[in-house]
Image (cartoon, rainbow, N blue to C red):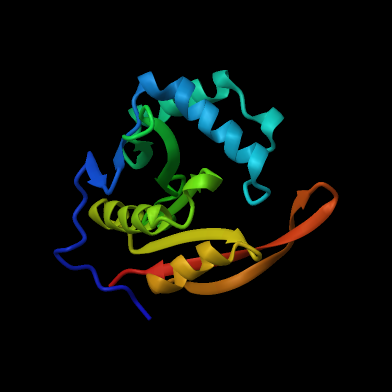
Amino acid sequence: MPYTSNSTNKIELPTYFGDFLIRQVTSDDIEKAYEMRKNVALESDTILSSPEEITIDGMRSWINSWLQAERKLFVVVEDVKNSNIIVGQLWVWFLDTKKKTSHIAEFGLEILNNYRGQGIGTKLTELAIAWAISKGAKRIEAETLEKNIPMRRIFDKFGFEQEGIKKSYLNVNGSYENAVMYSLIID
């Protein structure tokens, strides 16, 4: 079922969500964003990167290149009651490599384990959809591991449709995990 864009699909950053500040990343966030990603990689087996693949130089390059891009969004979530540590991140990007697929946006997000179950994933997904629509997306794609039930519920909540399963997609300590592909079609 296509997603209908309406006036509530507005994006305003920075914004507060309870005790959290959601804002666009800056070059001042490189170290904190690196620490957050490293921690997620250490505590979770649902992300693509392993801890040793996450480097400060890689994070610096990633953030700086995304800050220059018009059709890429990198957002951080800070806990304002806990020294403004970064507890979540969202990335939204367009498949601009080919004109015929330039209407397709993708997104991914990560949240520290201690902050899951507080609505942050839902809020970031809502933000991803609104931003992608504001930039002209007609199709939004995302994927998650088959076992990541909370994220799959968020996709369902926003009307994403499951399109398929990538079998043995991620090697997690010798165990191969399936990934589920989702899409949201925008009317």
